[in-house]
Image 1 (cartoon, rainbow, N blue to C red):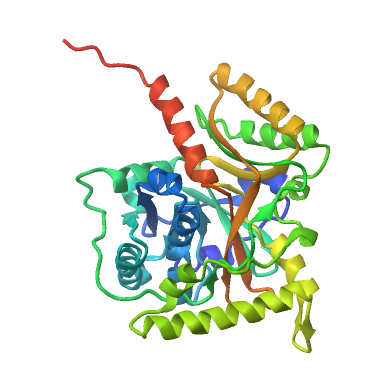
Image 2: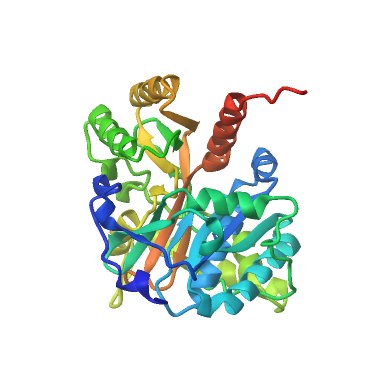
Length: 381
């Protein structure tokens, strides 16, 4: 069953997110890889949200680069969730330990990571394979297993936690060269929505209501619009350099990265093409291959909305929350940011979207606060 996800049938209509036919039970011998950044909220407050996104996406880049296989993954802003077959456990442990080391030594961020066997979850874990475009997939998880895995890894005495090991993960293709994405309608709305009783049908209703409120398909609320894609100059060169420098001279790697980014900037700015590359085609692929919507026991969205649409969406969610159906966290910003994983400019690339100023991190903090307020207080005896 090491290739069950590779052979799994994908779906392309996100409104079918909760169709049980799209999900398969994950084999018990598979392993959940959990990672997040301790202190990410404080780092975001310090304005380091681009670094948080870069480090948060490292495990995905490292594992996909290392393994010659389609692997389920979800990017969560300050971390990631992946599933791996047991035959790759040793290689993945090594890559994750190197990610922990690199995060601390180069970015001064504490990446927490652990591996949890699916059999240890004690509850079902199901995965669906959402196809962004041909050959590009983002996993969707349900069943409650991811939430359990996160709790097991984040426990202070967790036996699943990994320790750092000096070395450098394979982060080829991990970049953040594009300028922050300006809202075309006024606001970037970041949402994290949790069902109170695993009533998955509610997520279909939420997605449908959002399209009703905005009067457009969900894909048309994406923060990534082709006509607003611009290169950043200067981009955050140090973030990319830190990911690839390894044991080479830092200045030499920095200058090389600077030159590469300047060439990219010119191609974007002047809309240049060559016989093997079309900028217009690449921008369209970026828009298609952007993961602004995802599900891993909670629904995560980054949407480009008008102020009126934001107010109406939040009122709708508040009403559901007051009825005890959902809990949610939200964050508003004027822009979104994109961290890219580019294996090839010919279709094989994916782009991780987050609200600027730490959209997912702030939305998660908002949700966590609400959940703590709802938690019953134990009476002393």
